[in-house]
Amino acid sequence: MDDDLLFSGAAALAELIRAGDLAARELTEACLARIDAHNDRLNAFTSVLREEARAEADARDSARARGDELGPLHGVPVAIKEEVDVAGQVTTFGGRANTTPVRADAAVVTRLREAGAVVVGKTAMPEFGQWPFTESVAFGMTRNPWDTTRSPGGSSGGTAAAVASGMVPIGIGGDGGGSIRIPAACCGLFGLKPQRGRVSSDPHEHLWWALGTTGPLTRSVLDSALVYDVIHGALPRDRFHAAPPTVSFVDAVSAPTRPLRIAWSTKTVTLGVKPAPEHVEAVRATVSVLADLGHRVVEVDPGYPDPTAAFVPQFFAGVASEAQLVEHPERLERRTRETLRLGAWVRPGVVEWAMRRGERLAEKANRIFDT
Image (cartoon, rainbow, N blue to C red; front, side, top):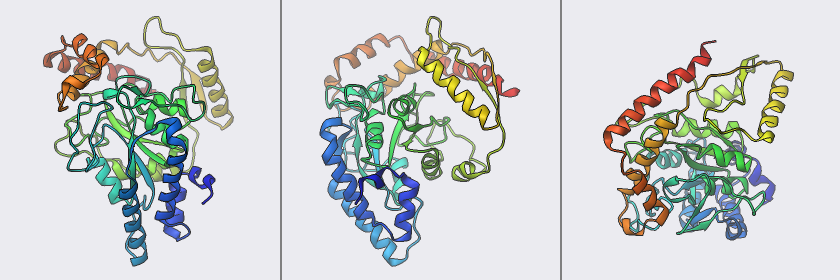
C-alpha cells in the first residue's frame, strides 16, 4: 500500500473502504507498519494494540462482506490519548501512578467503535496534561515529526505526532488550556476545542471542571466534522450539556460558502504578554487571503477580559481531581506533587467561584459577536 494514501484523510479512506477499493485490514496493517517504522523516533504511542486492532479490522471487513450497514468511520484507524479509557488498557494519565486496566471504553471510544473506527493504540501526554509540551518520566519525550529537535506541543502531543506523521488519520485529544489547539498549531493539523458539554467526559463527571473538553486532531476540517458527528452528545452524568447541533457538522462544512463578516485582532488578554512578530504576520497574511476570497474583514479591539483569575484555580483543581483517581499517588512525578502543593489553597468553594467568574468573562468576551 502506498504511504501517500495514509495522508489522504479519514473521509477519503472511509470512502475507499465503503466502495470496496480498500480493506480495513489492509489499512490497519499499513498504519501499524508506519508506527513500527517511526514511533521509536517520535515516541507518539505509549502502547500499540496490534492484535486487537487486527481483530477489529477483520470484523469490519466481515461486516462489509455481509452487507451490513457501515458507519461513517468504518475501518478507519484511530489513536486515543492516554487520559481516555480504552477497555483492557491502563489509563495512565501520562504517568506511572495507575497499574490496573479499565474494564470499559469511555463513551467517546464506544461511539468511535460504533461508527466503525479501529482503535490502534494510546498516545503520549504529560502527566495529567499539565504542560504545553509532551514529556513525562514514565514515557519520555515526544518529538515533532516535521523537526525532531522540536516539540509537537501539548498536552495532546502524542496524538498530534501520530496524525501528522501518517501513523493514523485520526487521533483523539483533550483541551483545557490549549491542549488540542497547541499541538495542532505545532504539527500543521486542524484542532478545534469544542464547547463544554458537546462531547461527553464519561466516565468522569467533568474534565478539569469547566476547562477541559475532548475532541479530535485531524488533517482537515472535514475530517474533524466527520468525527464530531460521531462523538458529540453529553450523557446524564456529565456536569455540562450543550444543546444538540441543528445541522450535522459535515453538512455545515459542505454548505455553500457565503461572504462572512470577520473581525481580527492580535491584541493579547494577559498583561505583559505580546505575540511573536511571525505570529502577527501570519494573522495579517490570513486576513489578506480572507479578503481576497470576498469576505468583509475588519480589525477590532475585542476588549477581552483577562481570564487568569478564573483559569488558575480550575487548573489546580483539575490536576488535583485527576490525582485523586490514581492507585499509587506516591508514584506521581515530582513536578506534579509540586503542582498539588502549590494549588492546595484551591478549595471547592474557590473552584465554584472560578467557574462563575469564567461564565461572566465569557459573556463579556462574546459581546464582540453582537455586531
